[in-house]
Length: 181
Image 1 (cartoon, rainbow, N blue to C red):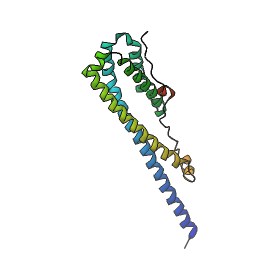
Image 2 (image 1 turned 45 degrees about the vertical axis):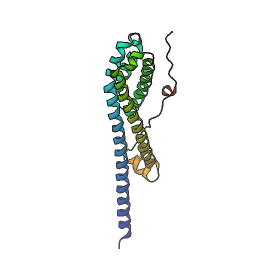
Image 3 (image 1 turned 90 degrees about the vertical axis):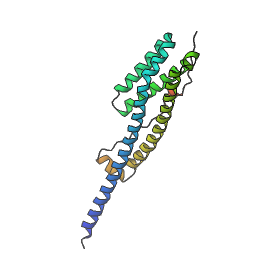
Image 4 (image 1 turned 45 degrees about the horizontal axis):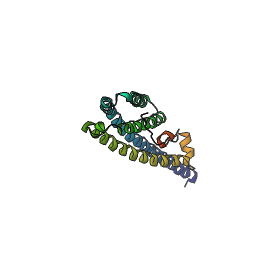
């Protein structure tokens, strides 16, 4: 029996199996990202309705409403996951300020359109949070897999790159302060 040929065949088979595992993990990360994108799209579809509802009650809050619209536009223009992560963090902060502003308008808070939109956005935000966690877990598995030896050798030869994580930006950690002085 020709052991060197058998050894080469086994090493090639092992390499193919390892490559396929990395492709599967990359596909899971991409799918997890797509799920976040779906929820963010839903959020962005709700935002114009929310802004229009608030406009009727809070005309002097033009600056906050413009920031919401600008942040939404920035996200829609983002191309890479990294750009989308940054734009999403900005939008999350601006939406928080919008809801803080709405607290000062009892008629707005009691309006059925606003309450319904707020509930839909809250539900969407919950789904985004879950999707982010799932994405980060999946990205972590992929990033660990491509960093381990010997998989790292195949990963680097085949162009596998680590995936970014969703992180809470400093802006999102701050308390929102609304003042009408």
